Image (cartoon, rainbow over all chains, first blue to last red; front, side, top):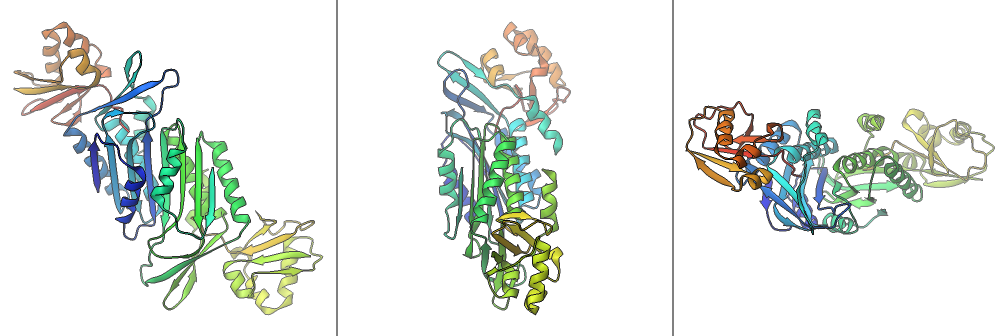
Length: 147
Length: 147
Length: 82
Length: 82
């Protein structure tokens, strides 16, 4: 059960392989990764992610614990970055393993929905001219209702 | 849009990184991989996967085309092995990319549900004493109804 | 002449992976009846059609499918990919 | 003494990341009222509570939450992780 809140870049492929290598008897592995996208109208210089040290790890730990109690999982992993990120870099990833695919998929979606709206991270998009905090989306809050 | 039906092992991490590196403007990447599990009661010597050369590629191509038409995707990838596989080895993977996570998740689940029951692969589990063709599960057939 | 292919346990029961068959069968069902009359191993392989699937020219279809112009017919159990 | 923390645009509007405050406030709402009276920058930051979230001792809660024994209160906009 790896949880890492870090400023450093990480290698999706290496993390995926390390996660899989640690499994035993799991038939299904799901990963999600979020990548910094450029803005439609204005090139982004960088994304700044602020977080709440201490609470972040605690909140993610509780979300992972909830996923493990709801689905039949072998393991789960969450890596989330903060600080300066550039377009194309990975922001975060989750990975889940389970005997069967439905559990692995649902748990990964649950983790993502909760990380989006319940883990204390805030994204700011910095362009040549300005800097804007990303607004939370209603659809992200509503996504929690399905669980 | 990579589709590969192959006997050779593949490296999940390397395939994941290659898939991500080829994306442009996609914020969400989902991967699924299926791993050979051992049998509960009897150690498995190996898994033998038979397929229908020609139809396999055609069927997977149509499933991927359908996914691309239903969801807003940047890209999709399917790798599926046949032949002799050992416990712990990857059987197959799918990867999807999309601007937003819901599309990437749903398309990956759709691909998996259809690959399970509509791509011409058959699994046989070979132990020290016997060899059994894996039975298709009703729940896998029923999973198609949600799409 | 139609190429008839067998996969998984259908192949094992019939004892070959494919054969070329001279047939006048108008549908898959008629082809199955012809095959069942050939030899007991065919009769056994096709005894429970609910356990079988069929593809005509590499497209999954059903037993009513006409065979006019068909080049390749394949019989196999439900698929277990993924 | 309570440690009060601000994140994202709340931090930017108030101009500091955290401060220690001597307060008798019994709930988060009472603390907010005290802060709003301090200076205009606080009043502005807390003008629309529907745009704010609060955590007491690192647990997300609501504005009715009592502050008895609380060590740390944090104010921030809705989270945008993932």
